[in-house]
Amino acid sequence: MRKRHDFGRFRDFAEFFDAIGKYRESDNDHVRHWTAPFVDVRAEVYRLFGRVELRILEILSSVDIYIPYECDRSCFSFSYCVDGNVLLQDRYHGDSELKANWLSGTSMTGMKGDHVFQRNKPFKGVALVSTEETVSDIVGESRYELLSEALSDGTSYSRRNGFLGVAPPPDIAGSFLQIANCRYPVMSRQFFFESKFMEIMSRIIAHSLPVDDGSTDMGEFETEQIKKIPGILMERVDNPPSIPELARELSLNATTMKSGFKKIFGEPIYARHRNLCLERGAMMLRDTHKSILQIALDAGYSNGENFCNAFKKRYGVSPSLYRQKGRRFS
Image (cartoon, rainbow, N blue to C red; front, side):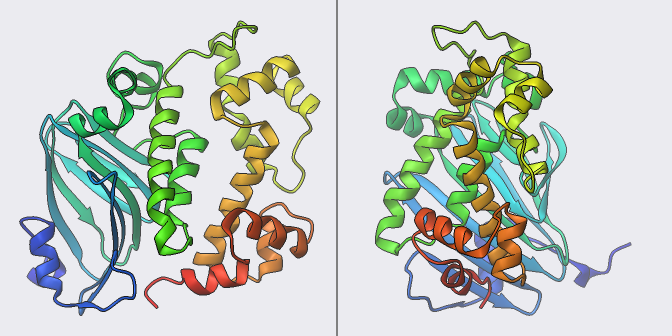
């Protein structure tokens, strides 16, 4: 049986933050940092379009923490775990685990239960929270119908994955990682985050719709094979296969594969691969003490100079400056 001091149970997040106490001052109005004997928390909160709340939350606790959540039928939310894990003890959908690089989402369906942040297991996550009515106003009624369909039973995406604790396609994960790793100046982050919100919504819709480019008749086999490509390339980052080699391995026509990939992921095969490599590099810069050269090699670059040039072009700062600004709980 647990001792009383081995866990903390709260009525809601407000009570949890009240228990932590006063936060540290920050030069960014969107950032709050709390420190208490049993927990260290960093929260970054933005209001997108004035009505969608974006939360980037980091928690490191020495005890198990239980915080209730409840979403009625009007709630719309997506939560992506960047690092660590959180347990979801949901009364309606059962228990599940949201672990690193997994996604949870809900719309049209009630959720009620507890977030459980486990002792000595650091958590970092990104959440987008709003109402169905608000999201419908932002994306448009017709697009919201497609989005609702993507999250309801009967579509290929939800039938295969559900929406509690699932591994999302690489392009959706990439959009959340870009939010988590954003180092743009504060004044430009709002616009960047709003663009990422629209990108995530469009990609979720795209993954539940049949692929049809008007000239290539792609069936379920071709679609599923093409979705394997980002994972294959990242697994062989030191020596990625060529387009002809990929096509032979996946039993696909090369032209169909290239056009189908761009239709699904929104960019050419190797452009997407380069972006995923840079996102891997960004995470290692923030979360490891590896040298920039070693990170460049781990991210698939042959030398540090090429990695630094590509990284600065994508993120607007050098890898060393990104690492300096991105250290957590500093």
